[in-house]
Length: 141
Image (cartoon, rainbow, N blue to C red; front, side):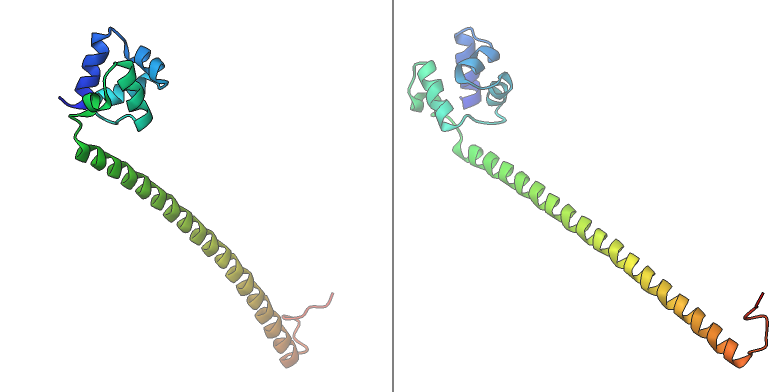
């Protein structure tokens, strides 16, 4: 019998709800539900508390636990956490790169505008020097 099945059986034999067992173990009803569904396992402290509560040894309580399954679940959770952390770091990097690209674009716009204004002024000055009497380029009112 697997641990989750054994826990469910023991709880029902005592006539307890998941919420009542959770209160005894100082965890939520949802945590007890996950233990009974085989989605997670109690930590060592809770295992000791469960063995005391059901008046059995730890060996009797956990003897049929598939340790490999517990390890795989633990590794899976660690991998998911790792992927989530990497994803957040990548998002942060892309946001920083995007911000740098925006700032770079603004700098180039300002530099380009300054160059354009300078070229217009230089061309106007040259035209004025070449055609000093032409009122088209420099009108005096």
